[in-house]
Image (cartoon, rainbow, N blue to C red; front, side, top):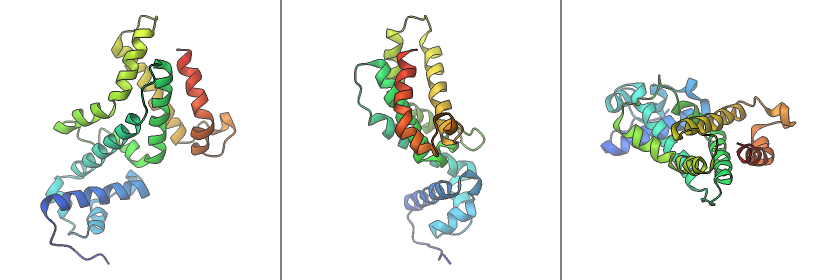
Length: 201
């Protein structure tokens, strides 16, 4: 049995609870999450999460923000090549890989019912995470000849990337490519698929 700790500093306890919540979601998905289990893992009383975060949504918002920061690190690792279609392909690959590596965070980040988007940090952290994608979409916009304005193009490109991530994560398209799991699809087939898609947009 986990012993209740009473010697956390305020910030340490909040961080411990966020780490515990993130671990639960990573291991069991959103459906397996509970405040009581987060408290147990952090070694504090069952009432501690509510005291520090108010509601389950408050704690899950922290995990979602952590997810956006992690997504941002995946996207920022892709260097700009100066070729808009190649950059979009590389960023799309990174986006899908993030979803595969962190499925719990990925699913949580876009749940309006579980994430407080009115949190003043939400817009800044999510926008910063997606900045490499926005820059690539802007560069692609300047090279495009179809007359779409920038918001429409970003919406279309993001929809495509996000939809791919969901389909690959949920193993909905493995049969199309004769693979047995999503990691195999992402590693072997997706790079070539993405290059073909963006070079023909």
